Image (cartoon, rainbow, N blue to C red; front, side):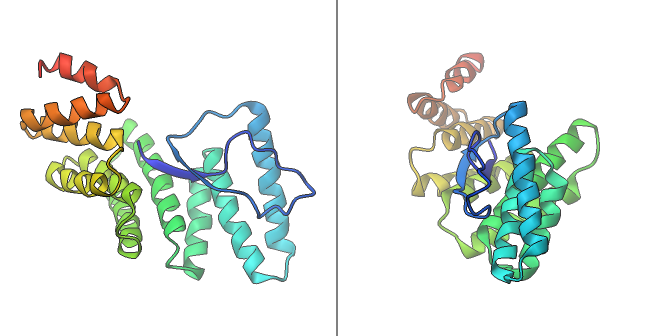
Length: 219
Protein backbone atom coordinates (compact mmCIF):
# COMPACT_ATOMS: atom_id res chain seq x y z
CA UNK A 1 0.00 0.00 0.00
CA UNK A 2 1.32 3.37 -0.93
CA UNK A 3 2.07 5.56 2.07
CA UNK A 4 0.30 8.89 2.46
CA UNK A 5 0.89 11.94 4.60
CA UNK A 6 -2.29 13.60 5.78
CA UNK A 7 -3.90 15.09 8.87
CA UNK A 8 -5.51 12.55 11.16
CA UNK A 9 -9.05 11.92 9.96
CA UNK A 10 -11.68 13.08 12.42
CA UNK A 11 -9.48 15.85 13.78
CA UNK A 12 -11.55 18.92 14.65
CA UNK A 13 -10.46 22.13 12.96
CA UNK A 14 -11.30 24.90 15.42
CA UNK A 15 -11.33 28.46 14.13
CA UNK A 16 -9.50 29.81 17.17
CA UNK A 17 -6.45 27.62 16.56
CA UNK A 18 -3.73 28.71 14.11
CA UNK A 19 -4.85 26.96 10.89
CA UNK A 20 -1.35 25.97 9.78
CA UNK A 21 -0.39 24.19 13.01
CA UNK A 22 -1.70 20.66 12.59
CA UNK A 23 0.05 17.36 13.30
CA UNK A 24 0.85 15.16 10.30
CA UNK A 25 0.64 11.40 10.42
CA UNK A 26 2.03 8.75 8.10
CA UNK A 27 -0.87 6.50 7.14
CA UNK A 28 -1.11 3.30 5.13
CA UNK A 29 -3.84 3.72 2.56
CA UNK A 30 -6.50 6.39 2.88
CA UNK A 31 -9.61 6.20 5.07
CA UNK A 32 -13.05 7.00 3.70
CA UNK A 33 -14.29 10.26 5.16
CA UNK A 34 -17.79 10.84 6.44
CA UNK A 35 -19.75 13.81 5.13
CA UNK A 36 -19.05 15.64 8.39
CA UNK A 37 -15.31 15.00 8.13
CA UNK A 38 -15.27 16.12 4.50
CA UNK A 39 -17.04 19.34 5.48
CA UNK A 40 -14.37 20.01 8.10
CA UNK A 41 -11.63 19.57 5.51
CA UNK A 42 -13.34 21.98 3.13
CA UNK A 43 -13.64 24.53 5.94
CA UNK A 44 -9.99 23.97 6.81
CA UNK A 45 -8.97 24.53 3.18
CA UNK A 46 -10.96 27.78 3.18
CA UNK A 47 -9.11 28.93 6.31
CA UNK A 48 -5.77 28.08 4.71
CA UNK A 49 -6.68 29.99 1.54
CA UNK A 50 -7.45 32.97 3.78
CA UNK A 51 -3.99 32.71 5.31
CA UNK A 52 -2.28 32.34 1.92
CA UNK A 53 -4.10 35.33 0.44
CA UNK A 54 -4.05 37.53 3.52
CA UNK A 55 -0.73 37.11 5.30
CA UNK A 56 2.38 39.18 4.66
CA UNK A 57 4.49 36.49 6.31
CA UNK A 58 6.02 34.37 3.53
CA UNK A 59 6.88 31.49 5.86
CA UNK A 60 3.31 31.30 7.14
CA UNK A 61 1.93 31.36 3.60
CA UNK A 62 4.26 28.58 2.47
CA UNK A 63 3.33 26.41 5.45
CA UNK A 64 -0.35 27.01 4.75
CA UNK A 65 0.19 26.00 1.13
CA UNK A 66 1.68 22.68 2.17
CA UNK A 67 -1.10 21.97 4.67
CA UNK A 68 -3.66 22.86 2.01
CA UNK A 69 -2.10 20.24 -0.27
CA UNK A 70 -2.34 17.63 2.50
CA UNK A 71 -5.98 18.53 3.13
CA UNK A 72 -6.72 18.33 -0.61
CA UNK A 73 -5.21 14.84 -0.58
CA UNK A 74 -7.52 13.83 2.25
CA UNK A 75 -10.60 14.79 0.19
CA UNK A 76 -9.04 13.09 -2.87
CA UNK A 77 -8.59 16.29 -4.85
CA UNK A 78 -5.25 14.96 -6.05
CA UNK A 79 -4.69 17.35 -8.94
CA UNK A 80 -5.15 20.37 -6.68
CA UNK A 81 -2.75 18.81 -4.20
CA UNK A 82 -0.18 18.24 -6.95
CA UNK A 83 -0.52 21.83 -8.14
CA UNK A 84 0.00 23.18 -4.61
CA UNK A 85 2.92 20.85 -3.93
CA UNK A 86 4.57 21.80 -7.21
CA UNK A 87 4.38 25.46 -6.18
CA UNK A 88 5.72 24.57 -2.73
CA UNK A 89 8.63 22.64 -4.26
CA UNK A 90 9.58 25.64 -6.38
CA UNK A 91 10.25 27.36 -3.05
CA UNK A 92 11.77 24.38 -1.23
CA UNK A 93 13.02 21.74 -3.65
CA UNK A 94 14.55 19.71 -0.79
CA UNK A 95 11.30 19.01 1.07
CA UNK A 96 11.10 15.24 1.40
CA UNK A 97 7.53 15.45 2.68
CA UNK A 98 6.38 17.47 -0.33
CA UNK A 99 8.10 15.12 -2.77
CA UNK A 100 6.61 12.11 -1.00
CA UNK A 101 3.11 13.61 -0.92
CA UNK A 102 3.24 14.59 -4.58
CA UNK A 103 4.38 11.09 -5.50
CA UNK A 104 1.42 9.65 -3.61
CA UNK A 105 -1.07 11.95 -5.32
CA UNK A 106 0.32 11.22 -8.77
CA UNK A 107 0.24 7.50 -8.03
CA UNK A 108 -3.44 7.72 -7.11
CA UNK A 109 -4.23 9.53 -10.36
CA UNK A 110 -2.18 6.99 -12.30
CA UNK A 111 -4.04 4.13 -10.66
CA UNK A 112 -7.39 5.60 -11.69
CA UNK A 113 -6.20 6.31 -15.24
CA UNK A 114 -4.87 2.76 -15.56
CA UNK A 115 -8.29 1.42 -14.51
CA UNK A 116 -9.73 3.44 -17.40
CA UNK A 117 -7.30 1.84 -19.84
CA UNK A 118 -5.01 4.87 -20.22
CA UNK A 119 -1.26 4.62 -20.68
CA UNK A 120 0.38 5.68 -17.41
CA UNK A 121 4.06 5.29 -18.27
CA UNK A 122 4.78 9.02 -18.07
CA UNK A 123 2.88 9.61 -14.85
CA UNK A 124 4.52 6.59 -13.23
CA UNK A 125 7.91 7.92 -14.28
CA UNK A 126 6.98 11.17 -12.53
CA UNK A 127 6.18 9.25 -9.34
CA UNK A 128 9.54 7.49 -9.50
CA UNK A 129 11.35 10.78 -10.11
CA UNK A 130 9.86 12.27 -6.93
CA UNK A 131 10.66 9.16 -4.89
CA UNK A 132 14.21 9.04 -6.26
CA UNK A 133 14.69 12.68 -5.34
CA UNK A 134 13.30 12.11 -1.86
CA UNK A 135 15.52 9.07 -1.34
CA UNK A 136 18.56 11.02 -2.46
CA UNK A 137 17.77 13.34 0.45
CA UNK A 138 16.73 10.62 2.92
CA UNK A 139 18.31 7.33 1.75
CA UNK A 140 17.56 5.51 5.02
CA UNK A 141 13.82 6.14 5.04
CA UNK A 142 12.23 2.65 4.90
CA UNK A 143 8.82 3.95 3.84
CA UNK A 144 10.20 5.77 0.83
CA UNK A 145 12.08 2.60 -0.12
CA UNK A 146 8.89 0.61 0.31
CA UNK A 147 6.92 3.05 -1.83
CA UNK A 148 9.49 2.93 -4.61
CA UNK A 149 9.52 -0.86 -4.44
CA UNK A 150 5.75 -0.89 -4.94
CA UNK A 151 6.09 1.24 -8.06
CA UNK A 152 8.80 -1.06 -9.44
CA UNK A 153 6.55 -4.03 -8.73
CA UNK A 154 3.62 -2.43 -10.56
CA UNK A 155 5.92 -1.95 -13.55
CA UNK A 156 6.95 -5.61 -13.25
CA UNK A 157 10.53 -4.63 -12.50
CA UNK A 158 10.66 -7.34 -9.88
CA UNK A 159 14.42 -7.38 -9.31
CA UNK A 160 14.47 -3.67 -8.51
CA UNK A 161 11.38 -4.06 -6.33
CA UNK A 162 12.96 -6.91 -4.39
CA UNK A 163 16.10 -4.86 -3.82
CA UNK A 164 14.09 -1.91 -2.44
CA UNK A 165 11.88 -4.13 -0.26
CA UNK A 166 15.03 -5.76 1.10
CA UNK A 167 16.59 -2.37 1.86
CA UNK A 168 13.40 -1.25 3.62
CA UNK A 169 13.32 -4.42 5.72
CA UNK A 170 16.95 -3.98 6.70
CA UNK A 171 15.96 -0.69 8.31
CA UNK A 172 12.46 -1.66 9.51
CA UNK A 173 12.36 -5.46 9.92
CA UNK A 174 8.78 -5.58 11.23
CA UNK A 175 7.19 -4.21 8.05
CA UNK A 176 4.74 -7.00 7.23
CA UNK A 177 3.64 -5.52 3.93
CA UNK A 178 7.21 -5.40 2.66
CA UNK A 179 7.54 -9.14 3.33
CA UNK A 180 4.19 -9.76 1.66
CA UNK A 181 4.95 -7.73 -1.45
CA UNK A 182 8.50 -9.04 -1.73
CA UNK A 183 7.01 -12.53 -1.52
CA UNK A 184 4.68 -11.73 -4.41
CA UNK A 185 7.64 -10.41 -6.42
CA UNK A 186 9.55 -13.62 -5.70
CA UNK A 187 6.48 -15.60 -6.76
CA UNK A 188 6.26 -13.69 -10.03
CA UNK A 189 9.98 -14.32 -10.53
CA UNK A 190 9.42 -18.08 -10.01
CA UNK A 191 11.49 -18.06 -6.81
CA UNK A 192 9.03 -20.15 -4.83
CA UNK A 193 11.17 -20.95 -1.80
CA UNK A 194 11.91 -17.27 -1.20
CA UNK A 195 8.22 -16.45 -1.77
CA UNK A 196 7.15 -19.04 0.80
CA UNK A 197 9.58 -17.66 3.39
CA UNK A 198 8.45 -14.06 2.93
CA UNK A 199 4.73 -14.79 2.83
CA UNK A 200 5.02 -16.93 5.95
CA UNK A 201 6.81 -14.08 7.72
CA UNK A 202 4.14 -11.61 6.61
CA UNK A 203 1.49 -13.88 8.10
CA UNK A 204 3.43 -14.18 11.36
CA UNK A 205 3.53 -10.38 11.55
CA UNK A 206 -0.25 -10.17 11.23
CA UNK A 207 -0.88 -9.82 7.50
CA UNK A 208 -3.08 -12.89 7.33
CA UNK A 209 -3.91 -12.59 3.63
CA UNK A 210 -0.44 -14.04 3.09
CA UNK A 211 -1.66 -17.43 4.31
CA UNK A 212 -4.36 -17.41 1.64
CA UNK A 213 -1.72 -16.80 -1.04
CA UNK A 214 0.41 -19.65 0.34
CA UNK A 215 -2.56 -22.00 0.21
CA UNK A 216 -3.68 -20.86 -3.24
CA UNK A 217 -0.20 -21.27 -4.67
CA UNK A 218 0.36 -24.59 -2.87
CA UNK A 219 3.55 -23.30 -1.26
